[in-house]
Amino acid sequence: MIALKIVYIANIIVAGWISITSVFSPKTSVITVFQNAYQPTEVIRLVGCLWLAIAVLSALGFWRPISFSPILLVQLIYKGTWLIVVALPAIRNNQAYPSGMAMFFLIWVLVLPFIIPWAEWTK
Image (cartoon, rainbow, N blue to C red; front, side):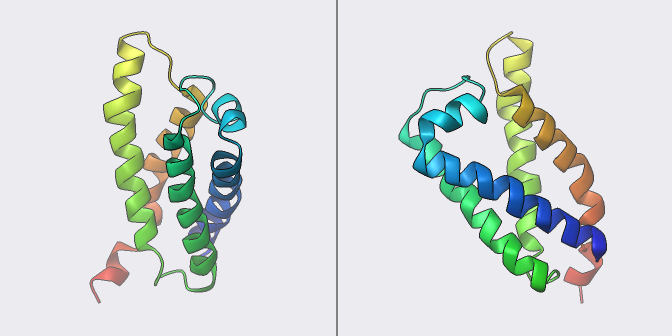
């Protein structure tokens, strides 16, 4: 349960900050979060809205860890997919991609399977 709460706190801090920057200042987000790999478009704001939802659900999850744990599965799926579909081809083709984001996503994808309360979902 402690590890689950630590993940929620990390989500609140990281996804919260990134979402606010992405939604309200996409140009800043492109520089700081996306490392100038992308243009500041409305898609940045859309991604910011997703991260804001993750931050809000994680805040609720801090108080009800098991009930809100499916958000961790959503993160595992989308971060893993992004790594395979976006980051890996960019690395292979020597193209620009947000390497800091890729590193964070990789760590999260490696950690989440051990944190997600799989057994609780089958009860």
